Structure formats: C-alpha cells, structure tokens
Length: 231
Length: 300
Image 1: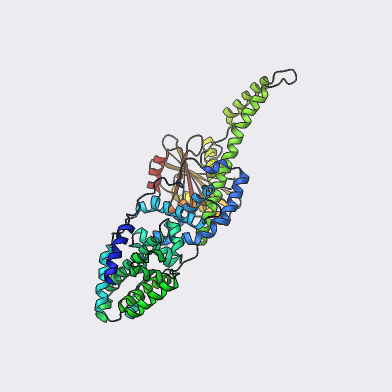
Image 2: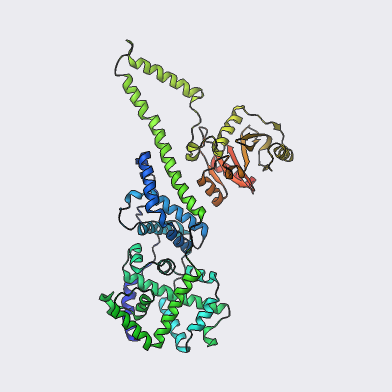
C-alpha cells in the first residue's frame, strides 16, 4: 500500500499544487468607469431587478457563509456579499440564462475576494503536506486505537480553535473544505465553481483535511490534551 | 471515477468514499474490503471522517442576517435610482435643448422668424441662470436623488440659507454650555457642541421638520468662513421622519463618518457622523482634505 502511495503521490504532487492566485487579472466583473446599466431604460432596469431577484438573490445564503468563513469576520463578509451582488447586478447581462447562476456568482465573489479583501490579509504560512503526512503516520504507529480518544479530545476544543485552524489553511484548500464540508456541495459542483478538474478538488480536500487534523492536534496539545500519552 | 483509479492515492480514495462521491459500486466494495482488512487505513478513515463531522457540526451553515439581506437589496435599489436620475438629467439637459433650437429655425411663426423667439428664449434662460434660477447643483448622487425629507438635502439647503443671511442664529453665543442648554430646552435633545480650532461658535437655531426636532450650530473663523453643523436624534431616521440613504448609513457605521465634496456650486464639503444618539452633518466651504483635518481634530 505504502509503495503505491508514494508512486501516486508524485503524480499528484506534480500536477495539483499551484501557487495561490494573488490577483485576478482581466477581471471581467471589476469596477470601471463605464456602467453597463446606463444603457438601460427604466423599464429594462425594473425587469433586470425582477430577474435578478429570481435568479441570483436565492443564492445569498451560500455566498454569505462562504464569505464568512473565508474572511473570518462578519463585517467583511457583509461587505464582500454586498460587493458581489452589486457587481453581479451590474453585469447580469453577461450571465447566460440556463447555466449555473450559483457558480457564476461564486466566481464573482472569488475574484472580488482575491482582488479586494485578500490584499489586506496575511497569507497563512505554507504547510508542507509531506510533514503533515509523516506526522500523521508516526502518531498512528504508536497508538492502539486513538479514534475514540481523538473524538473526545477534539470535541473539547473551542469553536475558535476550529475557526483558527480553518483560517490557517491556504485559500485553495480552505475553499474546497468550506464548499464540501460546510456547504455540502458535491465534487462536481465544486469543480464547476472553481473551474478545475474533479481530481484537483479531491486532492485539495484530502490535503486540507489532513492539515486541519494536524492543527487541531496542535491546539489540543497546547490545551493540555495529549492523545498519544493518554493511550 | 473509474478511468484513473490506477493513479489514485488510496488516501484520496478514502476521502472520496467519506464524501460519498464514489458512484462505482465495485470500487466502493473494494474500498470497504480494504478498510476491513487494514487497521491503519481504518484509523485514517475514522480520523478524516471525524474532522469532516467536526467542521459541519461546529461551524454550521447560518442564515443570512436580515441586515445583510437588506443592505444588498437597498444597494441594488440605490444603483437603479442613480441610473434613473442620471438618465433623467441627461434627457432634460441635452436632447430637449437641441431639438428646440432645431425646431426654432425651421419655420416662421406669426410672420416673425422662429430663431428670433429662440434668441429671446436663450436670453431669458441666461438671465434665469445668472440670477438664481439655476439652483445649487450637486454631484453627490444621494443629494441628487434625495427628497425634502433627506437629511443631506436639508443640511445643504439650511447651509445656503445661513450663507445668504436668510437664517440667523436665534441664540447668539460663543458659550458651548449655553448653546447646549438652549438646544435641550427648545429641541429636547443633547446637542454635540464641539470646540473647533480657529473657529468660534457664534450661535444656534432650532426648528422642527415633520415632527422632528433639529438644531443648527454655526461657527465662524476670522474671515467669516462658516462651519455649519446640522443635528437631529437618530430616532428621526428610525421613525422615518427623515431619510438617510442606506449606503451612507453603512459607510458611517463602517468608517465612523461619510465625507463628500462637490456638494454644491461652491464645491462645499459635507461630513456625516454619529455622536452618541445624534446624527451630525457638517457643511463647510473648506476643501475635503482640510475638512478632514478639522473633523479629525474636533471629533475625537
């Protein structure tokens, strides 16, 4: 098993990991001097609002939750949601009817987050996945069945610990973890949202969760819980 | 799913299995068989499953707060209003004017060439614009779209009345305590009477609009330049006796103030902020940069 793992890990390592995007160039939804709404008459504006309320507004919950977890701050999440919907309304003529409006809105939010909000945030320190993998393997070799104990220890962690652990993930990992584990989207949907292959979604998800596990163990250790020594 | 299983990391297959993303029943059975045979793999599976469950139980999906929802809807309404008022202004200023000129030159009327009427019309229009008919133009979309109930529109209008001398202080005083007491007695709220560097408090006027008490403070410097502060309790907006655009209210909440220039023909600067339960709006002929410095100093 181990042998197969290392063979396949190399393939994944070479194809999957990318540097996080710093800015989205040629963002078609960026704010500009030209407001496409100026070309509409009052009747068309009214129709657009009605259409927008029907197609886009129902997805606000998903976007709000994503914004809240990405920014980790309610005020920033509010702003991000507002910015996203303002841009979406302005460029609603670019949305192709019959396609996935949720994914379209998500892309606007993602661009908006990268260009406007992430600029002010410090990118989390990169975690070497190899280290996480080795760490995981080593503790497992020492213990008999730590799952129950791990469950007890993790359950006693604060919500803030979990939030901090999530915030420590790089955006690419954090995004898939939020969309899959918090929002309950399928791999296919996430792949469409992010415009990446399903394999990339799976790989990021696996790595993201592993890094989270390590972080949570670190928090547990700092609070006096030690899974290994208690077994 | 099945096409590239040979290149899959078994750990990642477990991830897919946890997320119920394996549709191939054969592959699913293979994974289950591996899990039952390999204890270490089973522990990894349980541990990853626990992490997933922890996330969804400790960070549940929450409903959009009512305030966030309202902000989005009112922002969209705000954009629509801006576009409407802009297009209305364009329609009035340009096409009508040129169409009128063109028409004027087309045919005689009562034996007199129509352009003669046109010249007279232009002359009258010029007089109208020069002697006060032009009104105070603004580039601020909220003032442009505001009604009489708008706090911003009221502040601009009151400021102009003070500048023109149409409104004079009811109480002339440079004593802040005296002004505070006057507002308390007349308008029944606690006014914010700041000390402003290089400006002296000269007096106050109180009045009522739509059942809402207002206070107007006037400050002057040595060159008779004025800083005017309009004040009213926050409840005036909550009760909808007065209007404050949501976007401006949001900006004040976020930044602690909202400042804009080019408020009228004189490029006046307007600043809005909350002081306790009071909404304050200052107007000044100072440029934005200077007003910001003054505001930062007196609103500590």
